[in-house]
Amino acid sequence: MKETVEHAVREFAKVYGGEPQWIAAAPGRVNLIGEHTDYNDGFVMPMAIERYTVIAAAPARDAGRITLRSTANHEVFTIELGAALKPLGKGKWANYAVGVVAGFLAYGLRLEGFDALVHSNVPLGGGLSSSAALEVATATLLEAITGHTLVPVDKALLCQKAEHEFAGMPCGIMDQFVSVMGQEDQLLLLDCRTRKTELVPLTDPAVEVLIINTNVKHELTGSEYSARRKQCETAAKALGVVSLRDATLETLEQGRTKMEEVVYRRARHVISEIQRTILAAEGVRTSGWPAVGRLMYASHDSLRDDYEVSCAELDAVVAIARGIGSDGGMIGCRMTGGGFGGCAVALVKKAAVDDIKKKIAAGYKKRTGIEATMFVSRPAAGATVLKA
Ligand code: ADP
Ligand code: MG
Picture 1 (cartoon, helix red, strand yellow):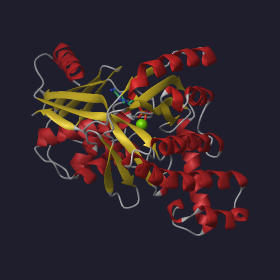
Picture 2 (picture 1 turned 90 degrees about the vertical axis):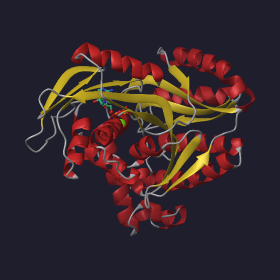
Picture 3 (picture 1 turned 135 degrees about the vertical axis):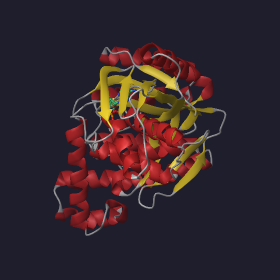
């Protein structure tokens, strides 16, 4: 994180002059298992990663204005604090930050103008939730500026609301929760119905989390995501339950004729994935790695075949991982995040990391013609104020 912060401070000086008065950082995340379950009241088990979005800021000369810049995007936004804040337009990067500012103002907190610079080493749009990292970094910065610390759950919900209302993305609660509440060496088992969290230690020194970025993004995510959400609601309605959390594979089979085939398959993914997540948490707790690995592969297959959110490149990575197998130090691998590109996540034996990286790089290049990027990460701590 040190380098990312130093870079942010240098860039801040370049574009605004002087030093930032406040600096906050929030991590991206990787989801070990529990995909597309969060908006079905299910379980997810992500961890924060050692990749951060840093936001540095100082009071503005004009107390009525917020200026937002990013090293990842040339478009600069100036926000007038007098009037009610509105979304900046579809696809504008600063929506995530402005939505969070709007949330703070809705709390009745007073805010004076500031100049802010965002810098991140979370890949943007890669399924590691740079969007939540940006929201949570902004919320953490605002805590530093106002001196008002939010309850972690409220902070995460405020950020989720910003993504819904300003970025137009009807996401679940996972990303913001783990970016706020992540802890070193712990996975976060989150019950998306009760919003209760449980830490699951990932401390086995022989095991590493390897993240593999396919470096592709098929531009389907928004529309397909909404379509999946609707299909889940349709399935729940047909089964007469509030959400798919309340269904079992048995009740699904009994209700199979009440829904279209595709809706049935979507529901089968969600219901089985919720079960897999609970089992995987138990597996990690007991270092039952072969079982955890099988659950990860099963999750991938279900996302590919039943939920249909994978793509050729993610499937290639998982096929290569299967080929490496447990003899080669590969415990398990699956796509992570919304799908249609982005990253895969693997649990690997530490002693085999370098070898596995080489095999995946070569195999992926051969199958797709694309260079993958890879890094390992320990479960990291959630958002922090670095300067106040
Ligand atoms: P993911 O969250 O998986 O990275 P999203 O599509 O949800 O993908 O969010 C990516 C978007 O978030 C970017 O296109 C951009 O609008 C915004 N964003 C995230 N981080 C930054 C950043 N550091 N600078 C500018 N915009 C960012
Ligand atoms: Mg996102």
